[in-house]
Image: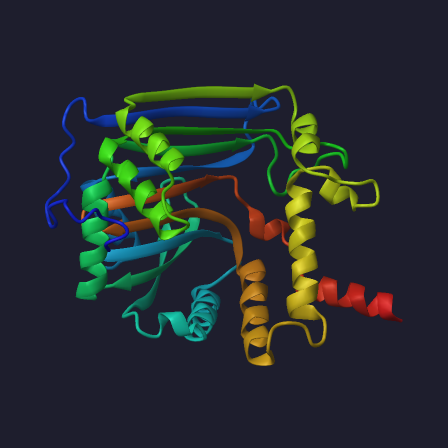
Length: 327
């Protein structure tokens, strides 16, 4: 708590941003043309009504809620989703870091206004300690505006040429209290300590009222090749940045951690992880949203056309591929 909230700030009071005491940010980075976005996300901060809506969708009344909302495949029944919820509980039960945290795993089925069937899996808590920490931190940092958006020129299941780079546009727009920069001070002090140069940078940011920057590159190929040192011997999926890059990386990770004999994971961890991964691919179609609320504060991450589960490699196919390669 001392790291997140400065000691000389009054605790337990809602942060009221005074006129002229805010720091506004407007940043955009465009790499390649994104005239018609095919996928992406928007992260934004909201207040009371949105927090109430999150609890209603999750069918809970707990003050602290973290909800994951997924688009369900058409032929999946509630029993199957109950199995998926059980797999998540098994994985969470393996985490010793959660042993002292008082929380519950709850699930709900909903139908969105457009008729889409969604499955909401929530971690909820009424633990006074968790509620108090979340409320104090969000009371202190609650902004007038906070939005982060990403638009992509490709979707996870789209058909593209093997040499087609993905294009992207990232944007950030905020309006927060200037003293929130003291979190940066605290983080620096927790690390190597604040040098005179660090102190000058922090003071400059504190004195700033508006920050605007817009960067645009012709294409992601030149940008990517400038920032990443790839060689011709690397797989094409690594040299051509696209959704295929992510899928290729996931497949390699699955081979190493879940499919191959031995590996870094013990059997008691590998088995439930494999079960969870298979059920995610079998029952779900896309990520719909991720939402967090604490009392009257809400952070909402909305996804567009993020049908990632339909694009993920199947464990059975990876196993068959490795078996065929070994024969």
